[in-house]
Image (cartoon, rainbow, N blue to C red):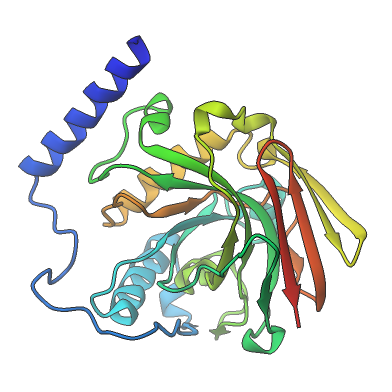
Length: 279
């Protein structure tokens, strides 16, 4: 009962803040977004756009808004959420990006099918995904608030594509400017987060029956709720208003690996499995 009252109080506060703010959810809400399937662009990055993280995020937002052309993102993602990943690209924190419209792969309960030739330099990550249940126009005050803004947790496979054009190589800043390599992702069945011990989730990835790696939820910033808190607040600080129904990917459970042809199977204890066929 106390938890329910807390949830209602938090939701009421969010709605009040949203109603009283001057934030604009879309740059031009009166304009009809284009119809038809969305084609995600391959973003190019110049040295000037990747001087600092602040500059890279500004370029990311401009480029993404231009490409969206009035459409809404399907969600957002975190990347390089492990210390090792950050050190590899000389960063001190994770990175964030925007999930393109129509980038969710269709999973019919058996498998999803993609063609490797549709990507440039595709990678693969086991992740957890969370669906937002309310408008988030301002940063959250505390990690404890995160549980009130997500309605579902799902197993996920993300397929980032690092084949972007860059005059400065693959630096952390360049990855940010290129929208953190966002390209495609696959979601499994949804569960109530309260029914799962999120930080106890472990996963195993196989390719054609052979185990590639194992991962666990705490490899993502040590705590999934902490990762969500960081991702939400980073996005809001970059000017995004997170909307109900959007998906948040928190980052790799295990290593990011090159995508190869074959059949991948990812099993998440307590959450189910995903199967992806790469042709």
